[in-house]
Length: 115
Image (cartoon, rainbow, N blue to C red; front, side, top):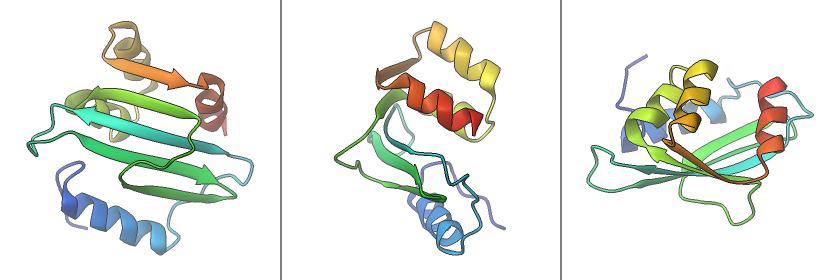
């Protein structure tokens, strides 16, 4: 599988292909709608992203959805570490250092991580 820069237009196309193929498994009890604002990107603009996990399905895409449980704002390097490396220790450290700003229902995010 080719590698694309995180959050590039090509990356989103590949993510959509993977989601459409049903290659991402989400526990049916997981229910989380989240918007991301990723700043300081190499693409000359902030990236607005949504992640919705519901009814056993996942949706990642460009743009925000209207009704969300949580909004996360962070810089590109931190977002890449959090979502590509999936490092829980790094996430906690980034939050404590103020590199991640959360608005909304944090308990929903924690419940989704546990699932």
